[in-house]
Image 1 (cartoon, rainbow, N blue to C red):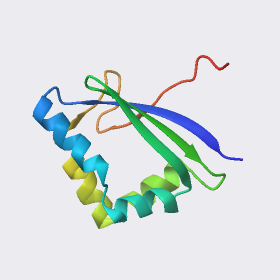
Image 2: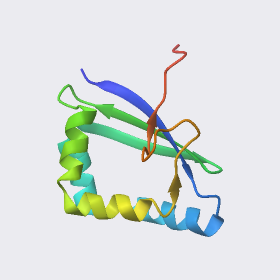
Image 3: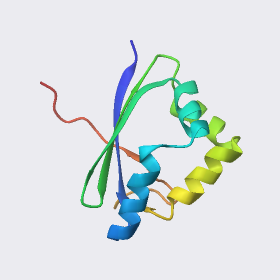
Image 4: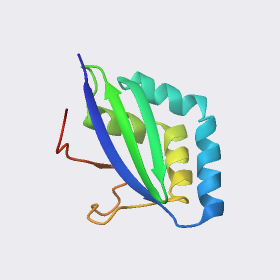
Length: 110
């Protein structure tokens, strides 16, 4: 069956950097795509309004945030990507130190 998650993150408020960030996401590195799919994520979309990003992620039953974090930590290419992305990203208010994407709480469903 799987699950749907919604996460948020802010970008650095700089139009040039935002344009670069979006360009990277037009064609993510193949290793990044593979790490996403291999973790059990079946669909992922990112939306932007101003500096605010919203990621909608659908997963299969095998997905876990803990397993994804462990696999990412052991993958040099993912670590290189994440380090590069920090140039463009900043944590939202209330995020823990070092935390990037923050899981949002669903408050309504139709």
